[in-house]
Amino acid sequence: MCAAYLLVHNGSTVSTVDIAVMLTATVLIQAGAALPFTVACGQAGLLAVAEHAGTGSALGMKWVAGLALFEIAVRRWGAPTAVAAIALAAAYLSRFVDPTVPQDVTAGLFNITVMVGVPVLTGGYIRSVRHASAEADRRRALEIDSVKAAERTAIARELHDVVAHHLASITLRVGVARHVLHDADPRVREVMDDVHANAGRALTDLRQLVSALREPESGGHLFVEPEELPAVIEEVVQRSRRAGLTVEATIAPTVTDLDAMRGLTVLRLVQEGLTNAAKHAGPSATVRVIVGGGDDGTTVEITDRRDGGPPLSTVDGPGLGIAGMHERVALVGGSLDAGPTVDGWRLAAIIPGRS
Image 1 (spheres, rainbow, N blue to C red):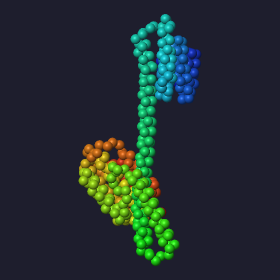
Image 2 (cartoon, rainbow, N blue to C red):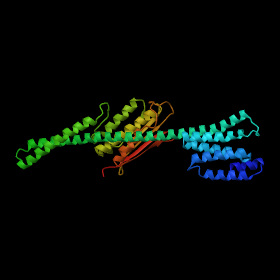
Image 3 (cartoon, rainbow, N blue to C red):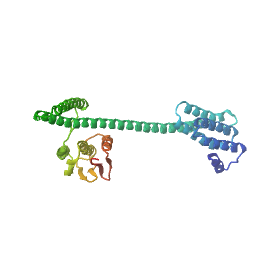
Image 4 (spheres, one colour):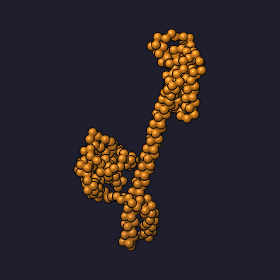
């Protein structure tokens, strides 16, 4: 089609060779997606035929053969591209074999450099960009998987701590009952002794697990009593204020109705939202934290309005912590939405009540 356009544009006479070359080139173009190497070499051969025939289709075939070389450079780098480039260069140089054709070596070298070099370099660049993008996506997926796995480990650590807390309470109460109920039926005392012993062994095992899972350098709370949750959230808010953020916090008293795992999820959401604001907001940004409760569960909303100044932290990127929060919220049956707003960032989550 390109060759036909150039022929009409130049007012050249269409010969039988032109028609054959153009039809064959058109057929080859259709197979370009499936057989790029074959098509590139075939188009180079058609260019050689057009050059030797001295027809008007030669100019159009240079474009068609160049596009075929570009396609294989994008899709199949290495030996196939090199062979196709050599074939195209040889097809163009074949015109210099005929001594009756005026020879301009300088112009010929320039033309062959452009005709072969531009498609190869452009195609190689696009291929490298695609490869880099795919590699970045793969690394990002691996990082997200790693964050999710780390978050699950953190949840397991917290869960062990919660269970250990309750087992310690059971052990204590059963121990007290054993000493108080002196006149109890021997069978009852035997059962209580067994419960006390098993609870004690389970508590020892859990404490060992907690010790193994806990990261020595990790601060924060592994277990929070429900009635202590508002005070702990306020402590996190105060810490962010001391770091330079302006934080407005509203915490509903109903958060004390949450169980341990859901309470920890709310706490981690507040921590992640404030950490994200500290990383990316300007020093005079205002962060609003709203922890509310209702029939549908507990809602957590953290928004920040940024002033465009330098961030308090130089950590780049949106933060893989968001991926971890998605994992944590999903595990308790909740939903999380986080993303940029017109003038800042918003994190909103719904934590359902006990089922």
